[in-house]
Length: 237
Ligand code: ADP
Ligand code: MG
Image (cartoon, rainbow, N blue to C red; front, side):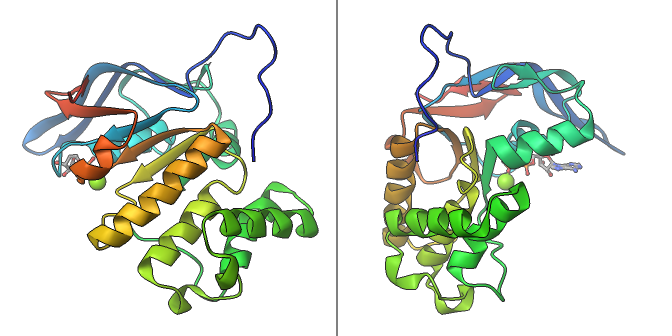
């Protein structure tokens, strides 16, 4: 699952870097300032919690990091590369190959099995079916779903569905995992378990993860906590 050793002597580069990022929504009542020129670095192997009240801008921040939105000022770097000047096709490629996304609701394809749901993004990327299936089975087994490979989403519990969604998010070996309240729809016990497997996966693969959550117990288990206050990303503790 490892993405391989870094070249000897290579300078470490943040998986995600916000430099003076600004984001505002313009409405009839005036501009709603979400980010006011703020910085953030997420390093490889780091698991960072984004904890802020509803409406603070967590999803907005994740959309900017995931290149689904563009900042109104500043720059978003992915793996050290500035993204604002990139053509859309290159942004899409980065998103597909270097990032994984997990949402509050799993968005799995209902007609397909767990194995197929995790195989598919790899086929889209161009992997051979046999290799893609083998990796999907390996990932699902790692996440404790060895006995559920042929189950469709409706035949899985909420926690199992989210674990499949996590497997799908990392199927293409991303460097950056972005998760928007991934356990927000689960009961506390299940949320804790799903989170544990997410953490071991991050640890095993060395990827960087930014996880928005309301759950302070889960946030406490991550490496670092940040919040959004007055349009600035700041340490929470
Ligand atoms: P969170 O995920 O922390 O709950 P969001 O990032 O979804 O917060 O939203 C932050 C604020 O920006 C909210 O007040 C929301 O209503 C507003 N907002 C989000 N998206 C848009 C949009 N496309 N247009 C206008 N306002 C938006
Ligand atoms: Mg949100």
